[in-house]
Amino acid sequence: MRLLPFLTLIPAALARAARHLETGAAPQVFVNTAVARTVDLGRSTTLVTTQYNVKALSDDPGAYILALGADGEAEPAWYEVLVGGKVVAVEVDRLGDAPAAVVPVGKMGKDETVTISLNVIATNTTRPLPESIEQREPQFMLWESATTLVDSAYTSDVERIKIRAPTPMILSHGKVPKTYVRDSDITKSSSTITLGPFYGVPPTVGKDSKAEQTSFYVHYETREPVVGIRNLKRAAEVSYWGNNLNIQDEVELFNAGPKLKGQFSRLVHQQSRFHAGTPAQVLSEFTLRLPPSSHGVYYYDVIGNVSTSRFRPGQAAVAKKRAVEGTLELRPRYPILGGWNYSFTVGWDMPLSENLHTDSDRAVLEVPFLTPLKGVVVDKEEFTIILPEGATDVQVATPFAVDSIEYSTHRTYLDTIGRPKVTITKRIVTENHALPVYVTYSYPLRARFSKPIAVGAVAASALTLFMLLRRVNYKIEEEEEKKEEKRD
Ligand SMILES: *[C@@H]1O[C@H](CO)[C@@H](O)[C@H](O)[C@H]1NC(C)=O
Ligand SMILES: *[C@@H]1O[C@H](CO)[C@@H](O)[C@H](O)[C@H]1NC(C)=O
Ligand SMILES: *[C@@H]1O[C@H](CO)[C@@H](O)[C@H](O)[C@H]1NC(C)=O
Image (cartoon, protein in one colour):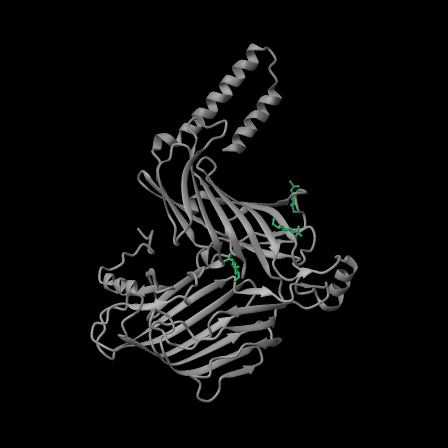
């Protein structure tokens, strides 16, 4: 099955490298001949991509120990490691006090080279500064990094770091260690700051590291609202009867930019919209991309249906034409200023057959963990998947580590034994976590018919009761049946 490409087994050869991690230092069997890093500053998240040109210093050096952060730091919220351009499974450990991955590089001879890439989405590295501004003022963010040089367990012959801000408006930035600099240390051009090149940088992590590090910061303007989600409750409900998969998101969104100083003025808001576009920090609308075949879209908040939304249905792939995603433009009831919260619910339906693969008795359901919003971090997600009644032997595979997976039973009044329910929770979810979760279960043919029988039984007993009471009201009965249909 094409199912679980991410469940690659870790080769036994890596055990040796893991032992080195315990000693707190990597044996110097590799050198980075060149390291190039790009840091893309944005709103709540920072995208850091690093390429390491690596040379083996001895025959059969084993695995490469890749530092994922500095001493004392946590594993990044999201990252992937590529060897020679292909994503590889890595084992994660700590090298001394730093998070590190054990990267398989195959069998290498002395002086052979390999390219390793590390792509990271860092969260919690930026914050608004000043913390509060007036409605018309521009918003600035401060990006801080505890270290300047690229974290590595090996010596780097030469390294360069490019930091790209979203606008050329950079108020200030930090200083770099002079020890490894020959000519230029920092150059700024428009919205890009280049650090280095740095030469002959010793290992920066591990217990033998001697590198001279400094912290670094960039204080920059961003002209887009900084949005965060405190809580996301996603529910996916499977209905065989209607061939339907319903997805519903309960979202607690907030504007994570600088807080509004003083009172909100609708007049100022209208004026600035008219003269210079919406002020950067105000969130007035945003767009969700939905699967091509999604339909029955709804959007409501605490007050009710929000009618100022627009849904453009997508198109499934036909013949040579590619599938087109549906777009849901959401316009909240009021503009969301810095520090403000906005809670809402969106939901849609999809044909179940597009998300379900069956193989005799075994079914595999594929449901996305998240509908991503660019640059937005979800502090906490709870994802519930409700399977049809009669499904047994439920198993879940997630493409990344989660905090918890619980199996329970969901019961509504029409269910006889209840429906199996899976609840997955995870803290710190980024747009790159918008990957499918796979739920496999057994669903015997017999179970597929249990629902109509149960519904039939309820309807029949209700009818009998009405007849006995000689108060046969066909209208109620009709409504009762409609309700039952909807439930399923
Ligand atoms: C974010 O960073 C701040 C300061 O560095 C720290 O106090 C806070 O605990 C961090 N939050 C998370 C969720 O990691
Ligand atoms: C909610 O608003 C949408 C968009 O204007 C509209 O199409 C839909 O009929 C409304 N639904 C209800 C239940 O009022
Ligand atoms: C937004 O929600 C958070 C957490 O629930 C709360 O601490 C904060 O006061 C709220 N902000 C406003 C402006 O209501």
